[in-house]
Amino acid sequence: GVGWGVPGRVAQESEGLRDMFGVYRYTASTVRNIAGGIRAVEGTIKMRVLDGAALASALSSCGPKCAHCARVNEQLGPAEPAGRMVEVTGKFVLAGLMKTERTITPYCHLADGCFDVFAIPETDLLTLGGLLAKAASKPGVQVADPKFQHWKATWASIQPSDPNDVFNVDGEVAEGTMIEVSVSRRALTVFAAAF
Image (tube, rainbow, N blue to C red; front, side, top):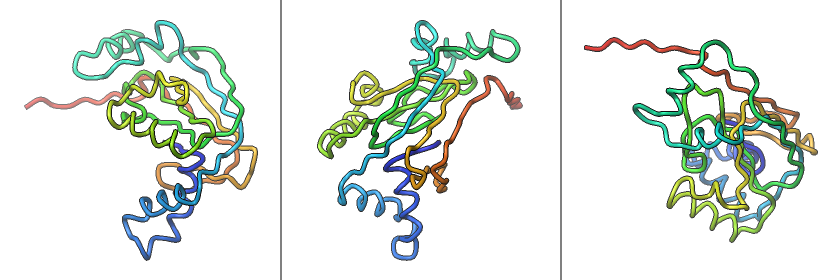
């Protein structure tokens, strides 16, 4: 996944904490970032998002006999770019692009060519803590909260206003120049032997 804002600073500062905190360096960096006051990043997120029936289908839990995955598997060949273009410019505490089922992005389907884009606009520590606690207590509930902006996208880019901003790309620090992400639908087929 890709994180910007607090996640980028956590990844950047955690390297300096490696000797002192070892595997806990990310936790120490997160506490340090939050205790030092939340600093927002500014920039533009552009994306091609799902809406209507496609969005409703994608916002479902995946599992055995998943109806959304069955519909995707019935479609042959590469997918045409789906959805509409959206652009959001502003200040954000954090933003992320993820293709994984986590508390903050609870709806993930392996082969649908979509990923979650989320952003939390500039806010205070109390509001942020409440939003994250809500997500931890019941995954998915934050998707309906106006303080938590969420989209299902097939393509997205983040363009920071400040070139000194950094991204957290799967735990590695990446420079704050524009980053672009897309996911291919049904790009891999896995065969498993049954014993």
